[in-house]
Image 1 (cartoon, rainbow, N blue to C red):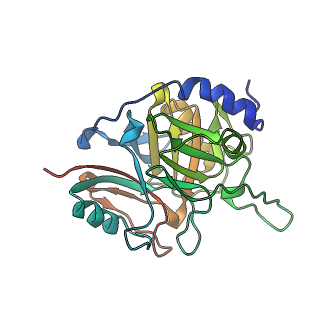
Image 2: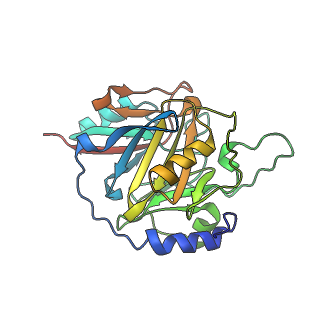
Amino acid sequence: MTDFLSPGRAALTFSAVALAVIAMPTAAQADDVCKEVDYNDAGYVVCDFAHPADLGLHWTGADGRPYRTFSALADAEDAEGRELVFALNAGMYDTDYRPMGLYAESGKEKTRLNTKSVGSESGPVPNFYKSPNGVFYVGPEGQAAVVTTDAFSSAAPQTRIATQSGPLLVMDGELNPILIPGSTDRNRRSAVGVCDNGMVRLAISDTRVNFYDLAQLFREHLACPDVLYLDGGRGTGIYLPEMNRNDISWHGGFGPMFSYSVPKP
């Protein structure tokens, strides 16, 4: 059994599986990317990307200002001749919508890896800093991975897109031992997993769930051995016109956003 809190060993085990999978970018069909899923009395929207290179990350526009809304991102994509098919919050952010940790898009690192450690001496530990936190990234060849922050820092892999968040929910098929079955800490939540055959799966709950239940969805139902929590509550949302979804953030806007766009006809 992998020791969840041994980031180096967990990352090496994971890399042997996920980083061996090279997915060439091909356009997914807009109508089969996402589906509604009921699991353990909770409702989710789950979006599958067999080709991780289809995914993009966005934070700021040409003017350097955060998009903040999915509609603003959709307008920017439209101006470039693309149709935004899907978007989802892509991690935690500060009050100025700046990502709290590592953020990279189109091969360019825009914010640095956050290796700060926060203890519980002064109160509850913010979710971002719960141990261990980690990074989801897609490399230049289209391979996706979820690794601990320590492992990412040590390996310094090349990335096309990357986002840092926390905590890790599942690593090498093992649930994070800090997760509590039956916890009353329930909220709308989202997460990203790297799953069978290197597929990336993103999920957002439509009902209030705890961390344990979200982790179980990914491990037991979606077959994802490596999963990173993204955000919850008012900081999570999805854009999916085919399901009439264009969520807003009650924080005044989103920070980083995952995206999937297709050329306009």
